[in-house]
Length: 413
Image (cartoon, rainbow, N blue to C red; front, side):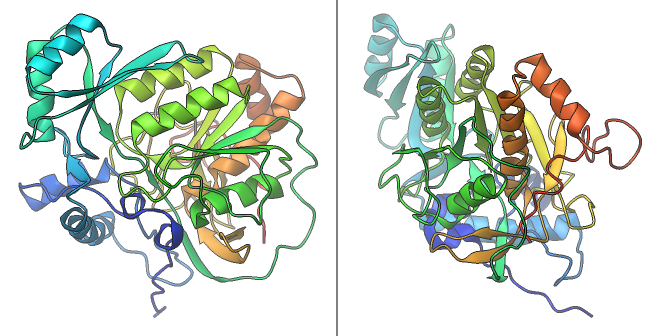
């Protein structure tokens, strides 16, 4: 029997703890806990079938829930569950929009008001509120929704990177991707190490931007696939509650201002109304967002932002073009790309074996940028990608591979 190798998570080296593990230790039956957990985070250590026997989805979920419970106990000062059991910034409520009357009402209820934040490049705004001392996040949301029923409130749920790294590996051999890609590609992730040059970098969390293994891996794959200009947003930094929806929206607003045509997001979390509006605003302005479907397994609820209608949702395949067993099932699936039996750089510039849908998204994003180079935008972008995609599985689009494999020859080996 093959022995099991416990993967070294990229996030353990450089991303904050909340980016590593994070769902609440909520009450209820074991099944209900697992159901809520799978919708809130990426799988922490997807099984590599080369070094480990395949186990059931339930076994994977139970292993991860055990670790997640430990995380919440350790970081309960900065993270707590929202009303759906998803991990979120402790005591923080976001109100979409904001006016003087609504802010005054919130103050009379004991909430702190941080002020209205405008996302000028997206035509959106939001107000960050802090719950009164001793009030739980679910209670805070219920209180505000009852007092201000004409306003929309949400927690600032966390989003998590998905993927694992194994042993060190030699630098990949062979040519890079399919040639030089001129269109800039943005990435929202952890920070990028010095081994991969970026055109611009900005932080949206405490201590950001700073080098991270996961972010560097994503950037190295973009570079290997031919992308010359990378615009990097670090939404984690050193913040234990990094990766929140608000930080991602801030990053998208910045990238829209930078006129970035394609953005790769290898993070997953629950549906968030502010993030949903930001993604829709980006799409309306011509930005293509490519996102990983996550590693929660096929039985997990849809993960976001991949599941938003305008986002290009990407799953991963191994070296034999088999779908990764841990890949999630989004509300819709567009494409597959290599996500295993490949290499990527860590923050120190060392190549390591990697696995996960996190690493498929940047390769698909590179192909989207190549289509932008060729003048394909809007509906024409998807049509051009469809023509390039290699059909896998049953003929035509399917729930396992989407409309086909992109960048199959981009895999760094």
